[in-house]
Image 1 (cartoon, rainbow, N blue to C red):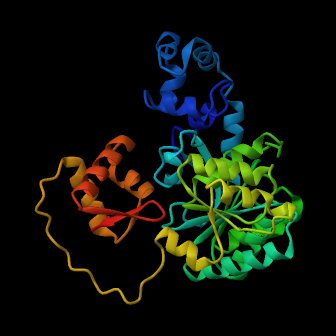
Image 2: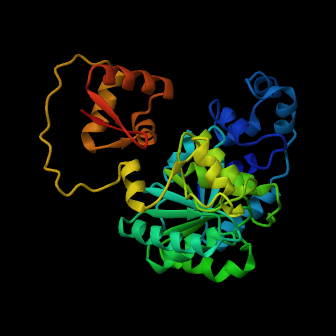
Image 3: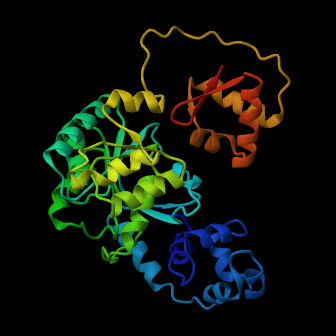
Length: 366
């Protein structure tokens, strides 16, 4: 266990300190140092102020953090702090990325291609047939499937992943000491056994309370390259997740349905309002995401660039030389540059015809 784990867990337990404030604090000091910092220093940090500074300096009870460490060790759970190398790096591009995650499983949370599949808890046969078909075809591409382990479409996505032997990750709205709904306990165990996993930001003994589900949904949206909405009404968790994915600059796809079908109202709205791409088949998804395999493609000969590039532009060109098409999230992660610097560099490279943009927020050398 990391020597700072006690303080990392405790950081998530301080009243008035959420993921956004924790991220601000960690820009100034390590987890342990936060608890030893002077109130005068803390309250001067933008976004903290006197009330939150007082919450930090008055925090003295580490017993719950100690209990959590004992739970983690007993059940071989992997804690993932926001600065850890195995932390889901796609989440780092979300302003409210979880400070600490608890993970039980084997699936690579930083796999090259991850898709979330979400929808209503009371699905139709139409949804079931679609989920089975698309997961089967995603499995053939070894794409990891993420969902929320709920009834309905979530369960369909996990079960289809198990059936077609592709890793699937369930994101929970409670601690890893339980499975909700309880009927999915067997499925959850199978997911872990079959190189998938269970992921949550909630410590043990946290109940699946209603207000935890929107928090869970932001992880489902943020850790994936694309979110597929299969069936949903105008309200509910799936619509929240779709909105979050849009806010995180992720691609959202939706399965269209009859205008008279209440379970398709949400999907049809997302498509109509340009918040989701109308999805009909897997080939379309793979093409839109730049994941389609072109068997006719011949090996591209590398060419020299005779344009004088800035240091930022050189970094991006070097990344694009490694892979044929790179998602903007991966450029963010590999470059170490700010989002603003990346946007400016890519724009200049496009204007110089060095880089071209592709559907699905992908970029490649021209």
